[in-house]
Length: 141
Length: 142
Image (cartoon, rainbow over all chains, first blue to last red):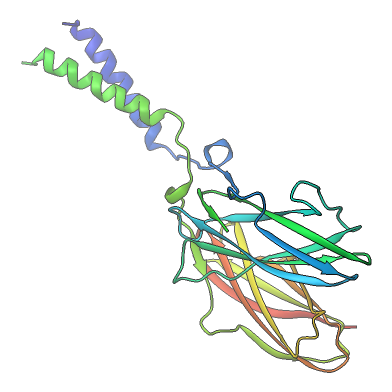
């Protein structure tokens, strides 16, 4: 059995801790968990384009595990010839990525329109890998 | 009179609970409340852009209902009729000074056509707090 003085000391500590918790708990900085999500595949899309200025439009999707209307950003990693040879921005391609409007009927789903424009003459096969940064885990496709 | 054994046990358990709560509490997943703001209707903008207008800027303004700054993301979909295959849209946070406490974005259309085309746009905003959405043309011309 512990002395009563120690018990009262513990109660005082517990009371102080409760007072701290009752203060404003700000969310942000390193208290926000941000995840990087990729698929298991070597690449998510591929296309062969011929000629300068030709374009292909893709739709990339992220389905969050839990959070409705999760904040999410998409990066498209672009490769040429093989899924491991990076394409050169401007020399080989340029791209335009826009998040599509959300749908209340599918609150876990985020979609992006990805436009890939080929630069230069000739034919080139592109491989695209989606990289999603989000405040929730989920699936990329 | 205190039952000291029970009291000691309860106090120790309470203290452990508090220590756990005071530890690092990560926010993410379903602990963040996301809100989608969207106007009714299939399209928000349904307008004719003249062939002489090489560039059109729409400003999309999200106004949080509590007037506080917030983190937001804009969603945009477009449809151009007829589609030349060279239509180009981009969107970015507006460089224009916002009026009031709104969070403004620019949706820019680079028009490759010489004849009038029909442009349809649909917007949505993801945010932490609810608010209202509006839009206007802030520039249209060569």
